[in-house]
Length: 562
Ligand code: ATP
Ligand code: MG
Image 1 (tube, rainbow, N blue to C red):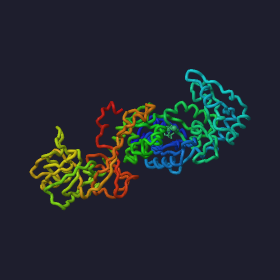
Image 2: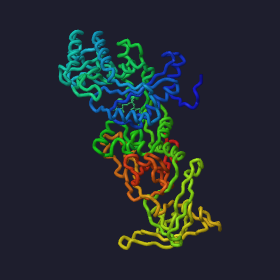
Image 3: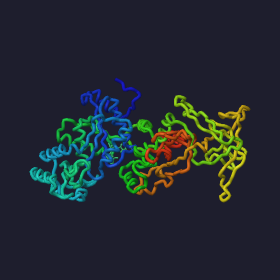
Image 4: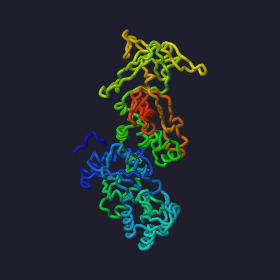
């Protein structure tokens, strides 16, 4: 059967389709997403989530959520909960298949005993530094450990005593006995277990030995009867050990490991170590700071799960590393919000406008559509009165060339309202700053058109001073000021000092009263904004700018887009 064209095609799906054709795995497709709960998920993880869950859905298979929690340091329940929340929010379901590698500790231990009994693993007393030194280099073979040829009995005894807690951290490790001269350094007697006397967030003090990733991961996959174990390219060399372990232990299920290129995104970092540093050293307000590339940060900023999924689909899956332009993610977010965000008016930097010929105390209501291209979204009433606020930037006392908005003697259209003409202005006597402008309106232009057919060059947004409500608006820029901060060891140096600007005295139209936390809007002419779900409350509205209206991606040439 041909694949439907609506699904993406890539080399991983090609492998799966070939396997299905050959009835490998009895026609089953089972994938998993295996995060370590030592941080929040980021947009790179979203790529892996979309891939694993997407493949399962496409081929009527299953995708498990498995916490790869084999290192007590840094793992926590908070991270588990955040990961569960984020995968759900992205729109994926593991149904009842939620697993923890820590539930397999006993089985993994039994597997380790089996390897020892086969003479394929030994307890080594070299220090970490010595192990490193003995490992050799790409050009030189390694050196065998002096403990490599202990008897099976001695190894069993020592390993059991490691488990029983008789030795301090680092005194011994369990190592696979493979080949110290292997051209693949991963195969030079890799460590399988280490002693770590640290309580684990799930197993407490039950264990003082913990399996290494390479040992735990393949066996967890096998226990869950995964068919295709999809991981990122840095594990390419580890595939030999994955296969060696499962072959030596003759497991019933031997999944196929397939590597793909991880997502790198410009102007940000996607390494957990670095994200942890940003959070712990308080360069950002937390994992969900709207400037963070985390799912929680993107959500708080106002991105939709649809936009993120669409982004992941567009970047595709390849076998070579590359850096994806942040502008593409912003483009996907903008494209999605353009469809779904209701249009409203909000003035970020208010300038008072008094319409001298408009009766005092009079209020008119204009009916304004929520989406000019989509009448189905309905409309709301926006009050108009004698005193308004407009955007400071929309007025210039001495307008430069190509500035077509308000200036002395100039007429502009108020969106959905009247034409107004600037007659005079009031300045702060101390600073000379224009603090108020006086206009007249033309009552004939209600709705925005003049019966005599005269044109204006600009339409600006506004709110009624009396009826508008105050709001705080947080404007976000990119977190880093260079395109590739990840390539720098001292990446902190490249943080963008202007990544957050807080505007405290904004005014938004009254229809926003009671908006639900997390709801998203387009403030006409200003960008897309989302009501912050943490800091916003009844009367004190706080909006995060999700993204501006300007699309730098659409402007990029096709060569730069790649
Ligand atoms: P660390 O940076 O600490 O190694 P990690 O980012 O690999 O952590 P894990 O929790 O081990 O985090 O990742 C879970 C899964 O997400 C893994 O299968 C990993 O390959 C995948 N993943 C992680 N980062 C990316 C990325 N940037 N692009 C695509 N997939 C990723
Ligand atoms: Mg990892």
